Length: 355
Ligand SMILES: Cc1ncc(COP(=O)(O)O)c(C=O)c1O
Image (cartoon, rainbow, N blue to C red; front, side, top):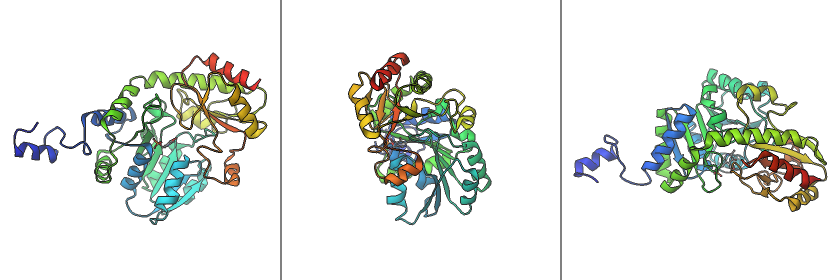
């Protein structure tokens, strides 16, 4: 309610608290933005209608004009598609690199305008050294954007490691119940103000109901992440001796290629994501799926139920077999999003399905 025209004008100018149009702001979205900003240790946040719109908004806030983007080659497929199909035709250049090779990252930063990483990669769960990459980016004054979807702010706070902006697909762990699509970015008040105005102009803000669902999810985030982390590590360990399992990928599993970095950056656990390679390729994956009694198939991740996905036809379907092979994703690679059921039940279901 507005007392008079001056009162409305004061709200529209931001001089008085309140809301005047749903695309510009609403109470639930404000609360969600503040909550995620607080969890990540940021000054401010902006919530948008999906993880992808959050990422797009963040990229344009940090690099509004065509420039060179240095990105991990293990990016989520939708992010790689945004870079290749929308930003490259608009004049951006993207260098996709192995972020495990810090010398290559340092070399490619010369003259770049943005560095883009993910805390834990999909599906093989590598953990790049965000601290080292953040320090290099800072030294060269290049903004550093981190997709923290897989870790959540409970397990990792990339702003403390040198990130400029952190992004989440809130569709995953923040929401936690596989019942909404949303995205959030957080960072300094100045960058978030630019991002917010662009999001309002391009019509991407999050609606109030989804914001409410995400806020409800946040209430149990800490409990869920602890359980996801414990159960995924227990399943990863148990899987090493299951029949047909050639390799298990989990950041904190003994012998993991990112073990040292993961133990340093994710001391409280690595969340619910893991993967494994099954002997026998697609037919063996199908046989396992046919035998599951608890676990189900889903393209998404981060919910309370344990699900598997098959990167060859889900997250990595737009790649050629050769591109997938270069990343280490083969016809037997299965990604698992470990839920919050009793870990013994989940382990037993995989054991009987692979037995
Ligand atoms: C790591 C990561 N980033 C971003 C996205 C995109 O999020 P959304 O589907 O909410 O747009 C996803 C979706 O799977 C993802 O896994």
